[in-house]
Length: 409
Image 1 (cartoon, rainbow, N blue to C red):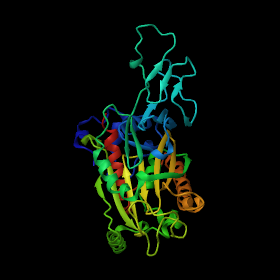
Image 2 (cartoon, one colour):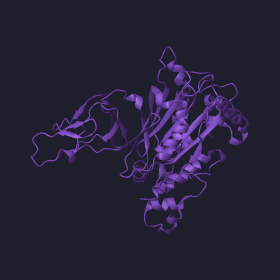
Image 3 (cartoon, one colour):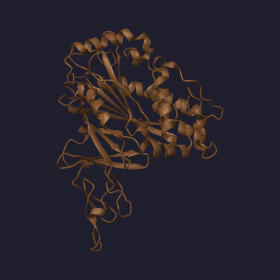
Image 4 (cartoon, rainbow, N blue to C red):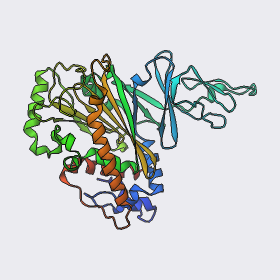
C-alpha cells in the first residue's frame, strides 16, 4: 500500500501525483502509466536511478582490460576489468564536450581516447591526458563519471544513485541462493535481446505473474508446477524441499521486498517444484548441462529471485537464467536473457546450445507477443484496469511498490 504521507498531498499539485492518488487498490495501473512521456521520465529518475541493476555476469569481461558497453534509456555504461581484476562502471561521456569516448561495443583496451579532442581515460575512468590544457588544469577533477559497482556471486550490479541503497541484504540472499548453484564459478553460454514494443512495466508485470502461464506458455506449463495456484502444489513443493535437503543443500528464501524509503534494496527469493520426474527447464524436462555448484543430483526444483525492480534470476541445478528489463522509450523496452552454465562446461561436449536455450527462447517469444498485444490494447482511451487475480499476487505487490517509488522524490 502507498505510504500515508501521500494522503497529505494536494491531488491538484501534480498530474502524476493525482494519478497515483486515484489508483484503485487491488487493480492494475491506468493507461497513462504505459505511454505517458512525463511518467516515463519519472520512472527513470525515481526507479532506475535509485535502484541497483544487474547488468551482466562477470564472465563477459574475463581478462584484464576487457570492456563492454551497456545501454539503459539514454545512458551508456562502460563496464571494465582493470589490470588488478577489479570491475568498474562509468558513463560513456567525455568530461570535456560530452562525446562518446568508447566507440566500440566490446573489446580490450587499457585506455579510452575521445575521438573529438583526444582526452584519454584509463579503464578505471581516471583522466590520463588532456592535450594542450592550461597548467592549472587538474586531471583528477575530470575523470569519467563513475557508478557504484557490486559483484555478488559473479553478478555485476550497478547503481546510478549518489548514495546507493544498502546492498548487504541482497548479497546475503544471493549467497544463500545463487551461491548454492555455483554462479560465481559459472560462465555465460548465450545472450539474446528481445526488443519489445511496450512500456517496460508491462514487460515486468507479465514476468512476475504466472496466471498467464497456462494459456500463454503451454511448453513451460508442461514441466513447471508454478502454472498452478500455490495451494495446489504444496505437496510437490514439500517433496522438492525433501530432495534438496537429502542432497545436503540448504537454499535460502525470503521476502525482503521493501520500499526504498527504508534505505535498502528490495529482493525476494522463493522456490517451487517442477513436475514429477522433471529435472530441468528444457523441452522434455531432462538435463541440458552438467550439474553446478553444490548439486550432485537434481532436486526437481527451481529457485526464483526478484531483485530491485528490473532484475530477475532463475536457478536450475544444471543452468541459470538472468532476465534483464531495459527501458528504451515510454513505449519500448528490451528484455535481455542470459544463460549460465558451469564455468568448465564446453559447448558441443557438455551441452547442446539449442537444447539449453530452447525453453526460455520459446517462452520469451510468447511473452513478447502477449506483452505487445497488451500494449496495443491499453492505448485505447476506453481501457479501464481490472482487478488483480489471486495468482497475480506478485504483480499486485510490484504495482504497490512501483507507485510508492514514483510518489517520492
